[in-house]
Image (cartoon, rainbow, N blue to C red; front, side):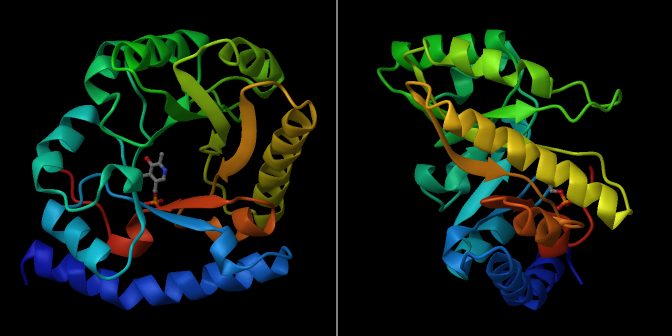
Length: 239
Ligand SMILES: *Cc1c(COP(=O)(O)O)cnc(C)c1O
């Protein structure tokens, strides 16, 4: 079967099931399905499959690489409100990206935040962003140290071209449930601590954490958005 047909089939088999599991996990944490946003992580997924997913009711997508995103963009049916950027972003790509997505989720440094702000102001817009928390794994180079997060928020609060709407995290994948739960719960704690500081221009409404292997756990521990790729579209095929 060709890749596009096969991925559409995998999506059909998984979409309702994942939504159902999200709903169950939301109830476990005293919320409902509508409180959780399912964002499809669409790196490597062909544009035909992404469009098919939107026709079937998908509401959000997130791309990782600026170049890949721009290759898909002319053919995407999803309007800007439904398109996020979730990958590692180099400052020299910011000018191109700003104004083409409704949120940049992967802002882990003041330098990147300042560049997004500057380029947004040049285009006369304000870009919603999430600040990325680094969970302390040496292998992951992106994101800010949790201890630095409040400081980063305070700096971002003064940047007029961005609006901080919450946090995002990519914790290391680990098959010990208790450990994962503790990691998610610590991130949630940080999210709430910052929220309680009520910093001007800093909203803490979106907590983006949880992927294919652990999105239910993340929701149980307080995620408001999960980013799911391979469970929706099957194994990624890198070309
Ligand atoms: C690829 C990716 C995901 C989804 O990963 P899966 O394990 O395939 O669900 C989520 N977040 C980010 C930032 C990603 O790059």
